[in-house]
Length: 118
Image (cartoon, rainbow, N blue to C red):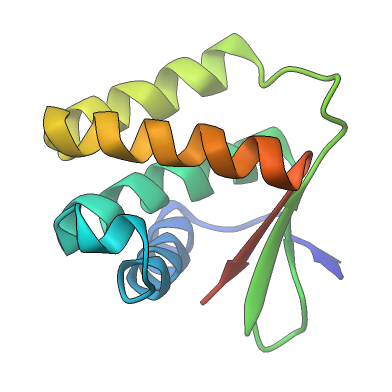
């Protein structure tokens, strides 16, 4: 695993978009939420994990990503606020509610590890 740091905002958004596009083509939430809303949500989520210092690439070629942290440590309020604000600005409310419900279910299932495949 490669810890990701020293990325530009452009790189964060580029890979966040790729991650979102991967999720937008998989069964589940993608069947009920417009693709662009999923993509925008994942751009915000990717940025949040990156700013938290918990984003890793699975290889030098960035074929996949992993966000890993101790579940007992909360996301800093400033990062959470920025992520939520970005989502509110770029994702329709109806889609946000569906994404939030789905992500809570996945978080419980996965614990503190979230896999992204881009």
